[in-house]
Image 1 (cartoon, rainbow, N blue to C red):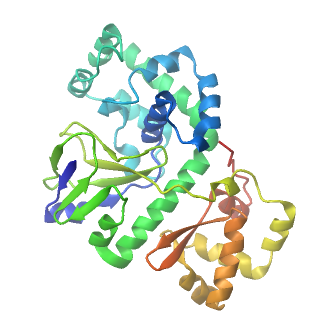
Image 2: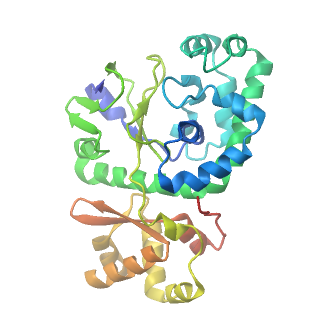
Length: 335
């Protein structure tokens, strides 16, 4: 069990990450890639990903064993605070990791996972070794995740919107109580199902909550106590994800060109924390049953994602829906 102990200052500094984090998703996808226990839906993705691995990427995978410790410096915090932070900026932060952090992290990597001489060069902050590592991290993201990033970030955005809506409507207590079935909020302590028995005293540093596509089973956090606290937790995967794999057939798109459904889609897009069916009915000035019917049609066409929110349903626009609204085609792909 992991226990995160909050003070009043920590509750005031609690925040949801700005969106899907490229380095956390990369690291956790590597766990899924090497474990061989990925969900059936990820089977095609895993087979294609393995075919795209270069020798440099395979060497990088030695730092991300499917079980046990992966170095904390591989997942810095910059991308958690700014939605516009790209992969290059995150990798620059990896390159700028202080040597004392590198040494602390790499001392905890098992020799059978990473050759000792390579680990030593990284621990010494050797510029060539660190550059080779970040080059491999960039190549891995571009080869394995970039094609699917709209889908990944869209599903994470849906989970974030749900958490933000709980925060807006019910406060911190309600948000923390509804994060994930493996997480229990017993003020002032957040109890998290975890492989190790640990206590983390936030001591005024706050906490960033990061929903993650590739986080599976139990949440994840950093081991180093001197890094900014973050809790990565699994999202509730969209049962209608298949609808996002390709654009809807022409007949459905024609049906969506009606003025009322277009208005529904625009209203949902204008709600960054998600939009309930009641909100839709009020904003579009239609009946509740009509709003529900239009939202269902949009969801089946892959343009909205819907999640339970207490007694209500919460809607967010998918990447395909945003592409339709903006006129810029998005790259949603099948796994």
